[in-house]
Image (cartoon, rainbow, N blue to C red; front, side, top):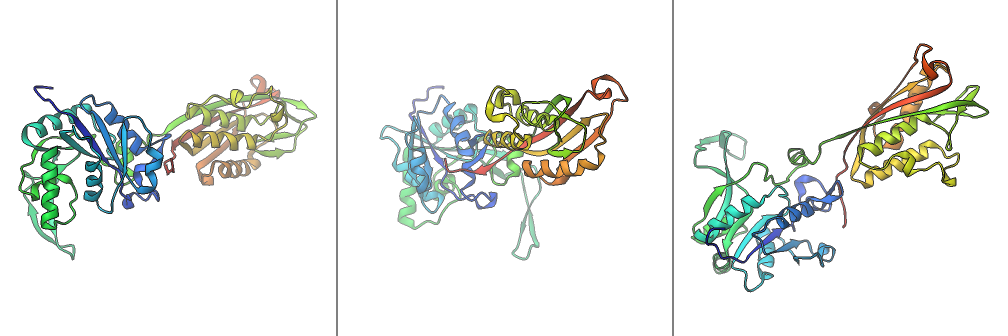
Length: 386
């Protein structure tokens, strides 16, 4: 960095409730693919070589959870954002001379943006990254009527990290103490109110603050995955025919270590494959006595649980059964209903259909039954306590 001698620490503000997001424990702790939004933000900041350390401000009941993570100081926040940042400020080391304040739910922050903010904050005292306003902006009254249309050219959308020389931020808080200032939505507003100058630099479109679930889509964290599974089992006398979790009257059944349900085995593989997990043969090996004769609906339930623990859940599934005999059409709705229950989706989200191969091949000759399965997974975001 050009002629900049700083010991820069970041205060990560993550003590809010995130009411608009709808997560009971706070959006910063929402788990997506096994990692919370706060963890993603910290990982991004840890990749910034210009930062010497971080103070993370969280709700009081979360301090013990994060305590002990290498390179972090963890403190409890207050009722307002300014109270929380004050708590983080108090935990900074004595030799810190430049402070960044960053939202705990902006995981898209980049080293380049951090460096730009540091450079200008060090030279000018205070700096915020901003974006231009592209849409027309109108002021409205309490009744929802337009009061006036604002000139958008001088307007900017403010992001974080916001950078300050340590003394600038200290003086701003001292001014607030003396003047009984109100709560501020960001620290730059506090610095401005104390009559200190703030300079802007270009922000980044990808540096999104997660406010509602739709923001996860913009960050690419809710992109779906698709999995395909295929299985085939031989028909043998003396066995029950179980297909799609339904017992079907027939003179032969599917041979297998479990109940031989080729449809559900294909679906298990589709689920596991989409989640990047080992296939059904490795999850439930036919060398393990505990799976001898097991109902494949139970295997499907276990596979779905493994997928959810990996941070995913089924959104929809589609199966095609290939069998010359018996006729399966009358059994398909029951199959779809049972599968939907295990996957915890609406019955309409599961498609099950049957076809023949016109007498061709082993299925056409009635020697076995084959199944193809497709599944769509979406991230299973949920508030976690760790």
